[in-house]
Picture 1 (cartoon, rainbow, N blue to C red):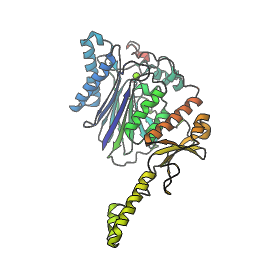
Picture 2 (cartoon, rainbow, N blue to C red):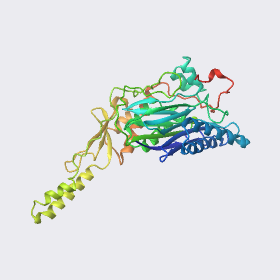
Picture 3 (cartoon, rainbow, N blue to C red):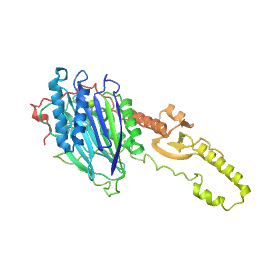
Length: 416
Ligand code: MG
């Protein structure tokens, strides 16, 4: 088995510096996100220090839990050495390859998710004040997302000489995709939109960029970091959709997120169309040539090249257009080239009635894009815009500074 990851990290639209850090070490098969806190760049130092110490510990064969404890030591020591850094801390969420999948280690309110068979499972529980209140039934998840103290976390690295680490193994199969992210993503973008982006974007780099774009489009209140990890070269195992992925919590019941897209009436994307009109493979062409008269060769070559160019040109670009009241993305040239028409790439979940008047009139005609990613971004914007117009609770309160609840108040610490 092999894991391949890509990341995107952005300062967001409100903060002046990016205190998030991430780690992708493909040689060690180690991936992590850390969200630092503390004034005057101390947060950046905390998150970077934790990741450096983590990498060194894992590289020397140390266990996940012990490595995170060593990362905690490193942040505590660094803060003790420099008065400008006193009070700094960081979250840390780690995935490293294990014999059957990944080992997750986790402290704070960054998160790990697993996308399997288009269903999104949340693998970690936030160590935050609001999540503790949700667990106690004193807040609904919706209230938690808008709560003014939603940034208050109850566990972090760098605060105390000891740290309690959540950890667990997750078995993986080929096609699984793991997301590690900071709260700047999850406080801005709901699980349904995360699922949609992860399930419909082919490569991890594009997925990470689209996730960051979505958080910025929603306001970008905080630094945003997303690490998207694909499982490749793995055995196909039946770790089927209905089997819940074990929660890494040492206590509590497995939590599965609301995995339904906001509008679950239609599938978001059809499988890619195959290249049925691709030119003949070279080997096959060679066998045909052997049977025809030599004088025909230049004509055949010329016709093959012309046909190849026509096929190539007819597949250039993408465009979106309303078709049967559905926003549809096509590959090819509107109207077709020499009888080779455009092909449906996918039909989005958006109906004509989901659009504004201006969007509708724009999509009466083909709207062209040079790449599939550009078309995906356009559809995603339309979907997010529709969600915002149809969901009443999208106004976010001003972000409060991330602080750590005093360790003398065990009532807010999640029970273990
Ligand atoms: Mg944050």
